[in-house]
Amino acid sequence: MHTKAIYPGTFDPVTNGHIDLVERASKLFTEVIVGVANSPSKKPRFTLEQRVNLAKAVTQHLDNVIVVGFSGLLVDFAKQYQATVLVRGLRAVSDFEYEFQLANMNRRLHPDLESVFLTPSEKNSFISSTLVKEVALHGGDVSQFVPDIVSDALSK
Image (cartoon, rainbow, N blue to C red; front, side, top):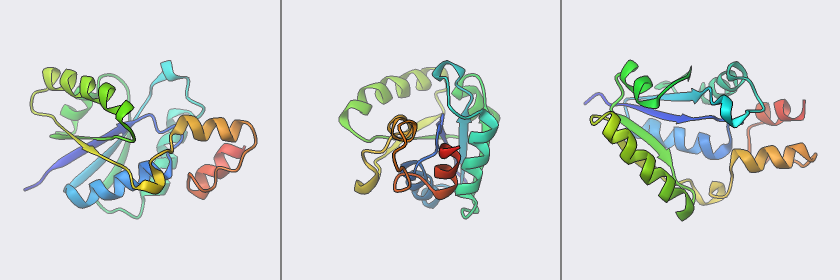
């Protein structure tokens, strides 16, 4: 059975937690499309092109993963790539309420798109892009939370 999954996010920046989920999803699905959302309302630190390039660099070891930038509704992006599974990460109970609402909205908009939730490994369970950016902004060492290429980009 050929199953395409989309793992969407802003990935500003891509973290070890994101990579952990992509690697695990790549073992579950035939193809994983990492969808890097434009998300201008979130005021990302990196441009869409930079975020796509960083995500490509840190997932290049996975043969069944592609990275694509997108704008607009996630369900339209899923239809464009004929994906039937939406992969989302849940770090804590607080993530569940929002993700539950999002899954129900996506199901209404695209009934053939099934949401699957993965939890990060324990060592990555507290990492968020927001926290990583905050630590980097104040000159802290983020090297244990992100790949070297991302740490370097954050220090510039």
